[in-house]
Length: 139
Image (tube, rainbow, N blue to C red; front, side, top):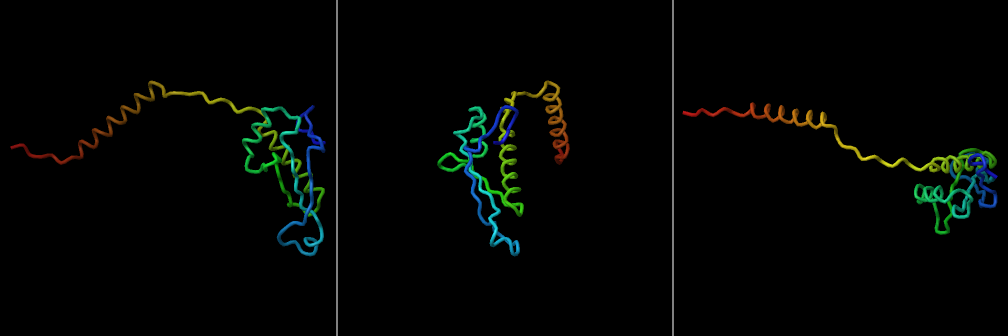
């Protein structure tokens, strides 16, 4: 079981964990040790609140497959146990990131002083440009 918050846990039955060989260079061990972890978590079957599930799916939809499983791979360490704990830690961090709802944006408008300052600046710029024009003789 993984504790997300006090009283909120993810059960081991919610996960499908598999191991495989890591890719890339690694010397003698890379071809014989299954240290890469693939963690699949069924988001819909979890006991976390529905609004958190919805925000999780919205935020990480590119990593959720057709069956509604979030798929994560971890192969940064050289042994299975550390990769598994790292994958679980990453998942908890991702859940905590979407746990609280985002603050709604308050619509604002510029203050009267800001509007006046902008218009004054426009008038000054326009006047400077008018003064740059050639003066024609009126005879």
